[in-house]
Length: 454
Image (cartoon, rainbow, N blue to C red):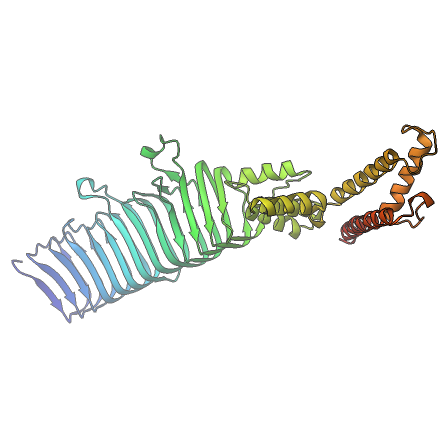
């Protein structure tokens, strides 16, 4: 054909255009065709517009021929070994599949039952293809498999499942307003080092599974080469991840409503202060002291922060492991206090943490109480009010009296002061000791009762 070719308002059971050369655009408009096959057609563009087609198959279009399907209702769609492909305002009742890409793919305002994009021809000097989707609604699953793309950009995409398998990107992944009712699987995704690939403002009502996230081979020699995937302002039900290479999955203003799985291999999580985790896998880990807690958090997260400690504490609380919950609470408060200005940091860590134990460690106030009693006894012995004339400082009888009086003062026993100490100054000092002792005794009893009740 030495000019454009137009099929307008054609009704047929089957139409096949094979080995046709058109000096212009091949347009199929306002047609009703049960099966339409376009194979080895050379044209500037292939346009299917405002049609109702049962099965549409487009094969082996040259790289310079753009395939456009717009405002069309289809039962199934198959595009194989074609150049740039654009689907706009398309409705597909069954599977839409694009195989052996040789150009960019753009899908806008489309409703599909399922979408599969598999494999592509390495374009060489023409550059690798790019896949963009906008306002895409898929009733079942979206699968991208065995692809090497220049970029992948998903915006306002809704599907039951999303599968990215063996996909390599020259630019970071960008997914915005992604909504999946079941699962997102990322397996063998290769991304460039440096900027994070991001999933933003998205919701996954099932598990997000990340396996073998990698950086490109050319970036691996760099010491700082780390594969980074970030969830920004997003919500997932469950997150599990593992990777042999150094990998960081960041949660920034995001939440895992159910369970955060233990990272595997070289993968670590990063949580900011605005993120939350409902539960976390512990794999039978037992925390006997703070060192084991810190070691576990260092293996699971990029750094030991209050948010990371809170995630572990919440997981322990759900399992009623109250002793370990108290350990995590103490460590969390101490680390949060370490971020305060110097004066407030000293008061918080020294008094509230070191002395009062943040209300969860009975041994901290108990140690202070015992130390106060002993120091008071030593002070009374050195001052000498309870020593008889001629008795030395090392006299054990006088020392026993001093210790007994120190216990009485701090524990508010109510034995009264000896006649030698009934002065205004000693009375004020006794009131001070008694008040402090009452504070520490009440705190210790409260902590112990709380532990027993739980």
